Length: 294
Ligand SMILES: Cc1cc2nc3c(=O)[nH]c(=O)nc-3n(C[C@H](O)[C@H](O)[C@H](O)COP(=O)(O)OP(=O)(O)OC[C@H]3O[C@@H](n4cnc5c(N)ncnc54)[C@H](O)[C@@H]3O)c2cc1C
Image: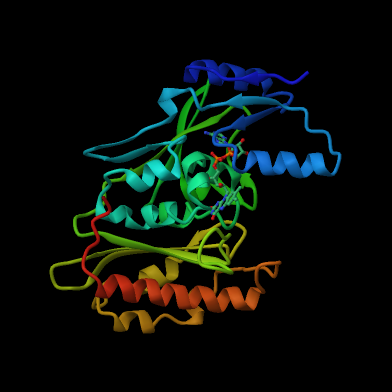
């Protein structure tokens, strides 16, 4: 008989996780919007799925969104709706835009940012904005806590650095420089309620002379794990921050991507879409006034 475990504290949750670490017979559950479709699919094909469930939804330490001088902490069980309605600095506009495009409102009310990262889909919409914000993840186990850059946490398609006894506790974003702005664009087969064919997040800060002081660009659904375009970022720093800069981005700047052919799009289409999205994102950011992400 399977057990449904709903601890009230993080220590209790970590003890249950540690107990099951050897047998891997326990499924962590947050909003369930990735877990239950997988369960249903397996059941439809008569595959056994008799794992215990560790429901994190009653652990207060895993939730909430807060700020201090060092930056912003987003609890792993913060839902997309909570992120969309939180008072966050303008640099978080991309994350807010992404949060409003994860499924529909029902999914946004249940689905969590931690679930999105731990599920490690190449098309996870939370990944590009958080990569572009230099986010770190905080992982806990009975052995202690550790922090990893998000890029070192999500290792590939459905692969993360989460150890068998660990739980993702929170996401930490360092305080952005003043005047940092960001945007998120996603292409799907239709406008809403769709998995990304390609997505981009860009975070830009300009200096007093109107030049790019810092720029972070991350692409989703175009490689096994969403990735930053480090070469392009380095090329654009110090350039005049005008919309014309967007047009200088070429296919060569996206050479590190490795998109695949699948039911949603061909690899060639994804490459072209990614290029268009990057240009649009930069042109939009370099034209528009600072968006206040409240
Ligand atoms: C109709 C529909 C539409 C969707 N549309 C989108 C979309 O547009 N964009 C998008 O990115 N996603 C989409 N999704 C996927 C999903 O909603 C998101 O990935 C969501 O953020 C998952 O969060 P969750 O809390 O529901 O995760 P869960 O399903 O509860 O968990 C997901 C995975 O993460 C693990 N996990 C969860 N929390 C933790 C934790 N704190 N520590 C360790 N492991 C943990 C679970 O064990 C599981 O493996 C969609 C899903 C559905 C059903």
